[in-house]
Length: 125
Image (tube, rainbow, N blue to C red; front, side, top):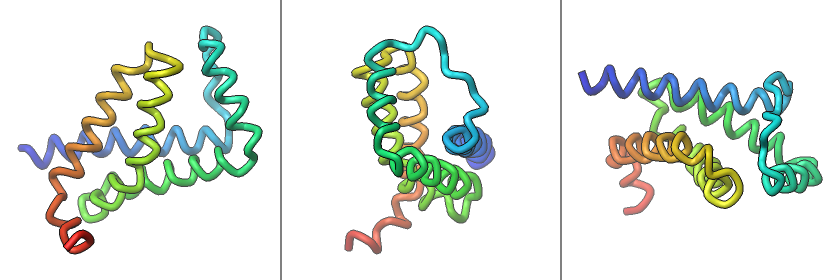
């Protein structure tokens, strides 16, 4: 049962990141009209660095795709972790209304890392 729940959660998590990454290339999701001004300034600054958003998009798509299958989930969790930390920090400082979902996503990512901790041991020993 635990494995089925983890798979469903991982599938949804991975698809959310694949969607977010693809949106960075194709811009098919509209920008919310009630976005805080500080977040608009931050996104404008990120757009000035021409390579940053495509890099984040690639990481999100690759990490999301790796997160879905059980065999590569441990790698996907590590690939997505820096992006997830950035999402949480952005929500803390610029858009607190999105913080609950960001924290849930971070908890899912950490849960997967903890579940796969044995796979990381060779890297640290």
